[in-house]
Length: 185
Image (tube, rainbow, N blue to C red):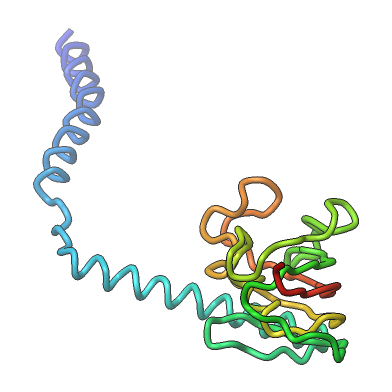
């Protein structure tokens, strides 16, 4: 009889032990909060993370363009570009009306948008809703030229993507032909 009582006490203790441990951990965790970051420390941390992500994007783009044998140039803003079919047409100027044939794809080859499917892009350079990487690339061209732009997320669709076909933080490739660049009337 004594051994049965003894076993029951041990059983109750063993069943209660996890609850006791859990409660003690919760109290300990609450008392050991991580130190608060100052606004300046938080800003510095975000800058370091951003620089790291930009550097990784650059490494991916350089590797990709090397594998494809592309001779890409690099702008100060981070745009990679190559005008692979030069022409003698009108040099693009800010405010010009742009008519552009294009294919937009991801680094994995997924075609997201194209002028064949959606029609040519027609926009006013410097005053459009187009991503800054595309506008910067087109500003380097002449009418009739063909070019490709590899655009990192910070010049493309950023952290969210376009919430349709372009995923978050995507590096995109524009292959374009500048059909026309005309001064506004």
